Length: 327
Image 1 (tube, rainbow, N blue to C red):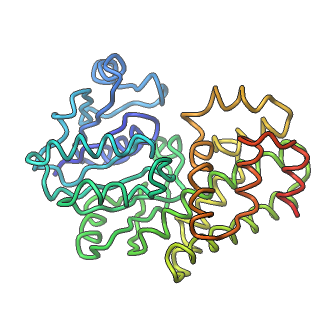
Image 2 (cartoon, rainbow, N blue to C red):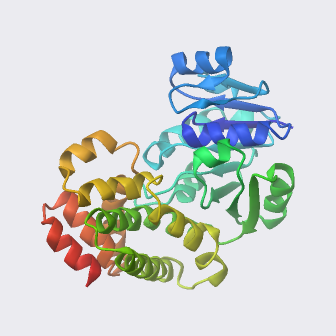
């Protein structure tokens, strides 16, 4: 048994630590050759999780051929959504090495160019690989500290999904199966934008009641898009880890990069400066544009999300955005 992880950032490294600590050999791929060399030499990812030891059964590489092979139990993708198409295309070009290997995607968001969710991108390109989404409330730092989290593995193949869970679930990664692959991704995408709104409210010192109001309204926006996209609703998804659980976690702590980003806006920091410094790290900033385009395409209104879009991209005032968020 062996698992390959593409993406040697905080989350990919944390997942590698959690799996390898339970005896599973892991290949960890990243683009930064210097950082990869340091991981193999010193057993630390200085760039992303510098204080955590990486077990010896993690092998890091910057050569993607090293991680694409037929003997992988699965391949886990922990890369930004806007880079997912490029990585899937690279995998497709090496299809002879990993045909039929299950692909587990941790990316959250919506592709700007196509308005597709991560699973839709992967299914378009990787037609021979079973596609799953791995999502839920799971801060990388806590996983690296071997603290437990409940996450969802979503996909169409229940038998294969449950088989994968038997192999990779442990006392840190407590994984449950869902078939509602699109519903899981809707919650994962919107919660980051709603977290920015919650951060703004907290940064303006408007109180916990107001933050709770935004979370409640945000949950309704997840449901609205969910019904428009899926034409039905699964309450197990909506009130499960991937929607309600991830929403609560992301909206209620400064350890959330999206919430912390909103907090700085609420405190009066320059928005353009914050975007320039955090664009690659704050998923909500790259998700909000395609989300609003998708909402228009589906003819649905998402008041909180459009307020954040207008604040970040249409130069409406902070006070006006807050008024719209809370109205």
